[in-house]
Image (tube, rainbow, N blue to C red; front, top):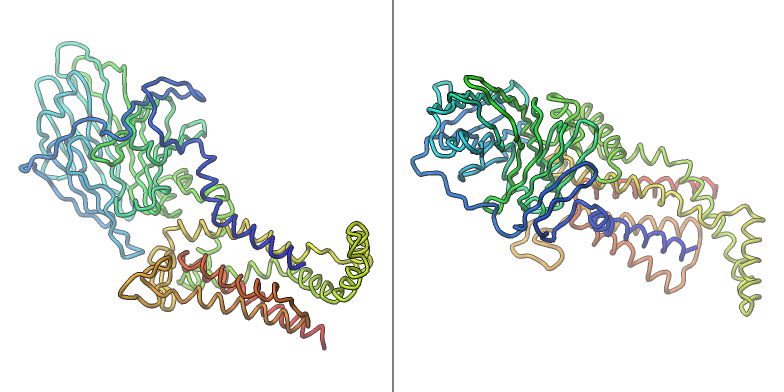
Amino acid sequence: MEKKVLVAVTLSIIVILVYPMILAKINPNLVTSAQRPQLVQKQGIIEKTIDNSIKEAEPVSSLPSNAATKNISTDRYEVDITDVDGSISRILVKDVKRKNDVLLVSKAIRSAGLLSIDGKGILAVSSLQPYTIHSDRRTVSLDSKDIKIEKNITFLNNRYGFDTVIKLTNKTSQTQDLSFDITTASNISKKEMFETRYIELSIHYRDGSVKKITGKKLLTQSRLYKNDIDWVVLKNKYYAIIAKPDFDAQGVFTKNISGEPVVGFILEDDKIAVGEARTYKINFYAGPMEMKELAKLDPGFTKALNFGFLTSVSLILLSILQFFYSVFHNYGVAILLLTVCMNLCLYPLTLKSLKSMQKLQELQPHIEKIRQENKDNPTRLNKEIMELYKRYSVNPMSGCLPMILQMPVFIALYNTLSRSVELKNAPFLWIKDLSMPDAFFRMGSSIPLLGDSINLLPILMIGAMILQQKISQSTTGSSQSEQQKLMSNIMPVMFGFIFYSLPSGLVLYWLTSTLVTSTMQFFMFKKAAA
C-alpha cells in the first residue's frame, strides 16, 4: 500500500511541475523559430510572416524632443497624447482596488502609440506632419491639402475603458485608395513581462473561434488576414488592452518595435470618394484582468481570462472566492473557507479512504504471513492477497482516490491563485500579497534555490504533514520499515521545497487542507477505538 501511495504522490508532483511545460509544447501557437517569408492558409486564416524575429520590424525614430504632449487625468487613468502622430503615447492605469498604479503603455517611439496610423498615399502625410491637440485635450486633428484626420477620445466614468473615433475626410478632387494600419496595443507593461508565458495576443472572431499568438512570435512582423474580427486583446499576467472595432478590419498585424510587441488592425483595398468622410470607431478596455471590470464594458470580454485547460473549473473556484470575499472582505479568509468547503465535499470519499486504510493496516499480519508462505511463488502470492482483499471488502487503491480527485482542482486552484489579479496585493495576517510567496523575513543575501526571504507558510506546511503522518501511525498502530520511515521523513520536506516559491495563497490552501484532513482522521480513528 505504501508503494501505491508513493507512486500517487510522485505522479502528483510530476503533474504539478511538468504540466505547464507540457501545455506549452502541445500549444501550436507557441512557435518561436524564425520562418522564411511565406503565405500560408490555415483554418481560413491567411498569414504572412516575415523573417525578422530578432530584428525590428522597421527602422524607428524616437519622438522629437520638442514634441507637444497633453496629459489627461481621470478616475482610472493618467493618459498622454502626443502631437507627433496624434496617438496615445502613455497610459497609467489607476488600479483602485489594489492601490497600485500600472504603466500599460509607455512609448517614446514614433508610430507605436495607440491610434497611430501607418498608411499609404494621402494617409502617408500623417507620419510627416504634426497634429493639433485641441483645448479639450481629448481631440487631435491633422488638416492638410489632401486629407483631414480627426481623432476623438471619450473616457468612461468608473470603468476601465474609453471610446475612440477616427474620422478621415478626402479633400482631393478624385476618389482615393484607403490602405492603412491602426495601432491598438503596444508595450503591455514591461514591469509585468518577466514571465513571458503569460504574454499573449488573442484574436477573437465573430464565429467564436480564437487565434492566439504568444512568446517570440509576438515579436515577429506578420500580417494575419481573416474577416469578421470581433475584438483583440494583448495581455500579460494581470492586465490587458482590448480593442473592439465597429468596422470590418481585414486582419491584425504584429510588429517588433524596439523589442516590444505592437499590434493593430489592418484596413486595405477601401475607397473614399471626393469630399467623403469615413468614420472608424474602436472601443478600448485597458485595465486589470478582473471579471467584473471586464463585464462592465462587454460580457464577452471575460473570455480574455485564461487559466489553462481547466479554465472552467478555475472560474468556478474564483466565483466562490469572490463570494466569500464579498462577505468577509479578505481573500485569505476566503481561501480558508474554500478549503473547508472542498474538504467537506470530499468528506465521504475521504472517510471511505481512511476506513480502507485502517482495514489494510489490520490485514498487515495476514498479508505478511501470506508473503512468507508464498515467497517463492509470486503468482500464488498475488492471487491469495487479492482474495484476502475481496474477502474483507478492501480496495487497496481507495486510499489514493481522494488525492487523485483533488489533483484537477489543485491544478485549477494553482492557476487561479497564480493568475487572478484579485489576489494581487491581497493581504492576510503577515502576508502582504497572496499571489506571491509570504516572505515572513527578508534576508540581506540570497540563498541558492530559496531566494532572499524566509517563507513561513511552507515551513508550517512541512510541520502539518509530519503531524498528519504521526496521527496516522499512532491511530492505526502500524509499524514501518526503515525505508518507509525514510520516505515518511523525506516527503514533507520535498513538498515544502516544491511549495517554497509558490503563491502563498496556494500554500495556505494546502496547509489548511492538511490540517483539516488530519483533524478528521484523528477524530474518526478515536471514535473507532472507543
